[in-house]
Image (tube, rainbow, N blue to C red):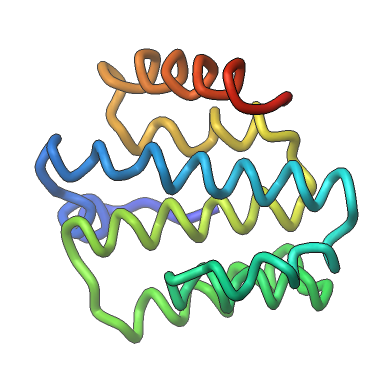
Length: 142
């Protein structure tokens, strides 16, 4: 889990319009989680060609290799620190890392969503959860 401080909070700051981009990221992470839970971590290899986010691709590969817990968090946090992101790119990376940590821990998709939705902000987390659940009801089982 990412350790919070004032500097981190400033780096996460971005517009509400940008935060809307979190929905598809969270859904993608939940889809990867469902696949891994149903078919095993190695099944994620078939997803790698369609992953266009380098951080997500590296993280999925590490999860497939069995890296989890503190080691995974340290590796992904190093990417985050080295790249010097802020604003929307930083927020996106934090959500991706938290999702990868949940994936590695085999959290069920619902728990993963509840870990990631706070990044929307408290006032928008519940509507975002309802939207995700609506999409899951139409397109896939949880």
